[in-house]
Image 1: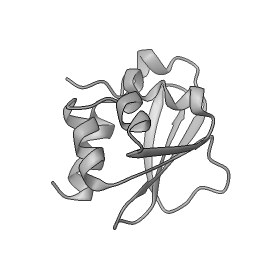
Image 2: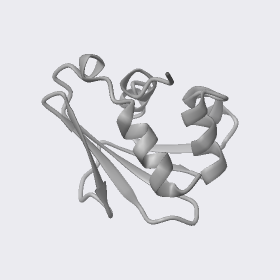
Image 3: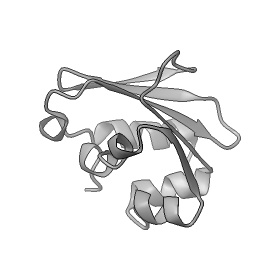
Image 4: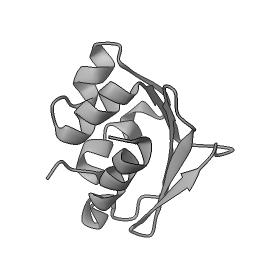
Length: 104
């Protein structure tokens, strides 16, 4: 799956109800890919290319781990505990990603 397909898959799963009044920016650094960030505000999710000046949480991972997260093969906590996912910034906020982007 290409980076763009993975990103499109993630954004298509956004659950506005789970977001509620959340106002947050998640920066993603995929191994071998261009950085991108997801902005969640007022129940909407926007995918943006590049690096945000002040993200709430930054997630660094390889493509394989990102695909496993998207497929439900692994969850974020498992990936984090195994050292496959690095999180800087608001770690508690990052734990909400599973609810914000549920696996179908």
